[in-house]
Each structure stands twice: as C-alpha cells, then as structure tokens.
Length: 266
Image (cartoon, rainbow, N blue to C red; front, top):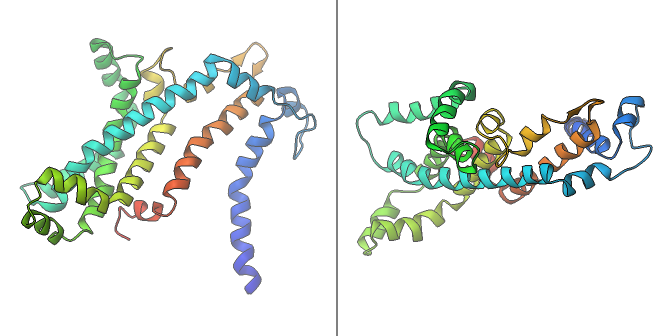
C-alpha cells in the first residue's frame, strides 16, 4: 500500500513528461534520423535546428511577435478587468448576475465565430498585420476570464476594508491602487497567468490577423513544408522553445494556480 502511494504519482508524472521528453529528443535529431530510426536519444546529436531558429529572422521574430502581442493583451485584459470585477464584487444592480454570466459565454464561443468579422473590421481600419490587432482580438476572450477570476478574489476581501479606507480619508483611486490592489496581488498574478497562456497558445485569430510583420511563432510553425517534406527536427526545436515562456510564468505563480482554477474561491 505504501509503495502505491509513490508509484502511482510517479507513473503519472512520467506519462505527462514523456511527450515533452520526446519533443526535446527530436529537436536534437535531423529529420532523416527522425524518419529513419526509432531511438530513445539522438544517435547523432545536433544543434543545427536551434542554430537555425536563433539565426533566421523568420523564426526568432516569430517568438518576438508572439511575446509582444501576448504582453499587450495581458496588460489590457487585467487593466480592464480590475474595475469591472470590483463593480461586480461590491455593487448590486439590475441584471448584474445575467451580465456576469454573459461574460463567461464569450469564453465559451469558438474563435472561428469571430475570425471573419474581426478580420474585416481590422482590415478596414488599418490594424491588419499589427501586434495590436491580435492583442485586441484576444481581449474578447481574456477579459471575461480575468473578470471571473478577479471577482472571486475580490469577494474574499471584506467590504469593511473599503469603508475603513474611506473613513481614513482615502479617495477611491488612492484606496484602489495603494490598498486594494496589493491585497489581491495573488489574484492579479493568477489572472495575468491565464491571460498570458490563452493568448500564447491561440492560433486561429493570431494567424488570421497577421501576415508578415506580426506573424507569431505558431503561424510560422505551420509553414515549414518544403519539397522534401516537413522539417521535423526544426519543428521539434521550435516547439521546445515555445514551452519556455509558459514555464517561466508558471514558476512565478505556481503557488496561486489552484486558486485561479477555482476562480479565487479556495
């Protein structure tokens, strides 16, 4: 029985890590070796795939473009969601529950529903193939998510904190920035994490709204076919590098992710 307590989690972790290991394993192989042999480690270790990514602007600018619009989206989503979540947390008004649920329905809708109208709108106003275009499109899904997460954290803060600050002479803006935001700093970190991750992995809108100047790494990875077929080693190296930003963000908010999944209510 005692052995099962560590054996089952160990097997589960190995099962989860196996695809990541295999991706890394492939990234240090040539395409010919990947297609020609099956091995648990590279037979002829090579860094050519990573060298290509770090020296070819077509590849490394994909990561730069992705980081730019994801950062813009995260800042926009959290900034807009903070006052909205505070309003839902602290005030009651007609239709507040229905409006709160309607926000979540935006997150339920598939991105394909909005791709064509957003593409036409942004093309008409000159936003096509810009970082701002993708960042704004992703707010459609990330702002509702951030509002739901932050409202849960804010509801856990006693309203007496607001009243005490007002009695002490704090204006709303000063209270919100200097007292309330530090109180829910963990919630803001969790909301930013989810906004970052959803924007980072989203492909359809990012690919539809960009062409050259702002093309993200996910779109670049879908265009690696040549006359000899797909460059599998290069794809594996690019995929391995896309894990790095997410891993860094997870490291900083790892202690609060469980609260985020529960919308701050644990």
